[in-house]
Length: 239
Ligand SMILES: Cc1cc2nc3c(=O)[nH]c(=O)nc-3n(C[C@H](O)[C@H](O)[C@H](O)COP(=O)(O)OP(=O)(O)OC[C@H]3O[C@@H](n4cnc5c(N)ncnc54)[C@H](O)[C@@H]3O)c2cc1C
Image 1 (cartoon, helix red, strand yellow):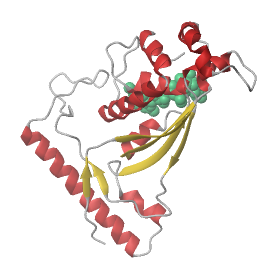
Image 2: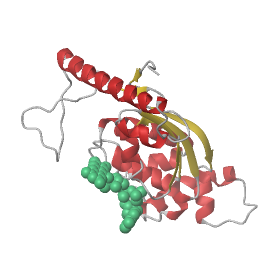
Image 3: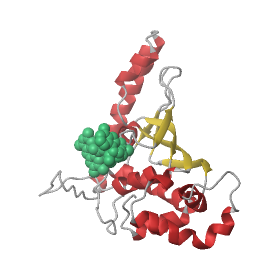
């Protein structure tokens, strides 16, 4: 009861595991038998072949690898991330078997967050808050989080089902999730959830979604560098 609330701005995306690499995608396309030539041996021709696949939108070879990350982010991020149904497997921490940690999201001061004159929902452009505006926002969020978590603990103390007591908590509380996905669906996710001028079909994601997507993008780029480079050159459109 009366737990100390932790306020956090960090959005964490941590590498857990992966299966495959760029050459494996080509070997999958060629449907090589179980004892294929060493992936390294195919390296010389890998880039050209991957380019061919991306240019021709031959997408299924890009499903023949997988990446697992652990993401720790507020539930508002999960609401949007979980909309990506194809190619993704998720396991989120339970709010029924254990008490949720009192960790809540506060935007950092450099997060554009103020609607100004002429604001359009269809093309949202936000301004950085003044220190006064930022203080007001943080005070409101902190107040709401404290009241909500306090009532959550009152209900838990009274013996209310954890799966119901959590209803009082908003979408600013953090939750952790293991996410496993193939490169094709990762590219599709990044196309929609990053804001990049170089994209052929630019998107306007939520700021926090862009931040977590950029962290995922860095991990993807490290492990599938050729695919990543070609996808960028292709206007960041998934095959
Ligand atoms: C900027 C932005 C604003 C958004 N605003 C809203 C909003 O206001 N409200 C809201 O509800 N959502 C909103 N979304 C979520 C959006 O509508 C998608 O649900 C989400 O981006 C997942 O995309 P997806 O369906 O392409 O991905 P996935 O679910 O991973 O699907 C991948 C692809 O598979 C195919 N596919 C999957 N399921 C089907 C199906 N049932 N039938 C046919 N084809 C299918 C499609 O080609 C799809 O692109 C928004 C997304 C963005 C990026």
